[in-house]
Length: 256
Image (tube, rainbow, N blue to C red; front, side):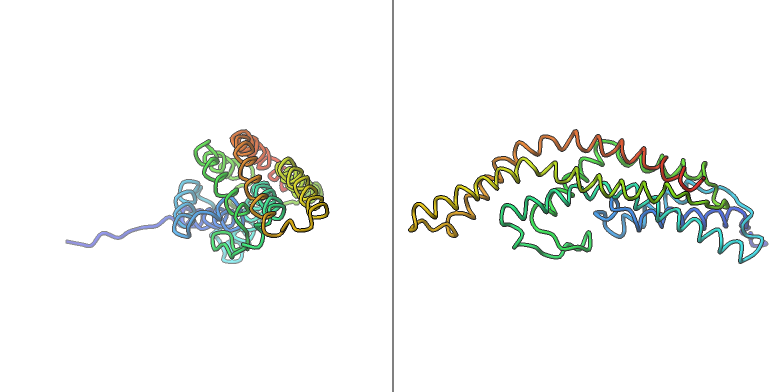
């Protein structure tokens, strides 16, 4: 009995390599994927990369294959960062609240994001990520990656437009502005509490503002946060729409 030889189509193998490169670049750069464990990110890259495979002719020469791999890596990194940077707005909002409530002293290194954050700086992104998944955010990422394959083939080329840099600046500006707007009601309340505590310490010198001020600000933070968190559902829905639009904007910038 003769052994069965397994034949592999070079065009399909090249397409798989380029697809994994694009999806892998997206996963590495996207803030939306960082909360997931390494095994989950690897599984996402493998499954989505295999699902988006299109046979290509990039395997005709090694230089052509490496050039196409570089193009896909750059496109994947750009898509991952520019579409997911809006997710950082919740880290910004959490950082503002941590600073105002005095909880910023509890900063520790967060291994999931690779950054140092305090209580709300970690809790806000984790909560929103859970809402993002249950609200249908993952299909938006999959659809966006599929659109990228149709707009810029695996063996295609990039032509970056100057508007792409403007889009990146606008994205960063938006996340800072919206993040501060989310935390503004609580930050304003904590500012008023600081003023009242300062007045109390001047009017009643024996009043230990340092001993009673921190617990008072924490109680105020938790009370207002119970109302503020009700906005997270709507904010998550808006974020999903912004991410969906960002895929189109980034792809148009590279197709110019």
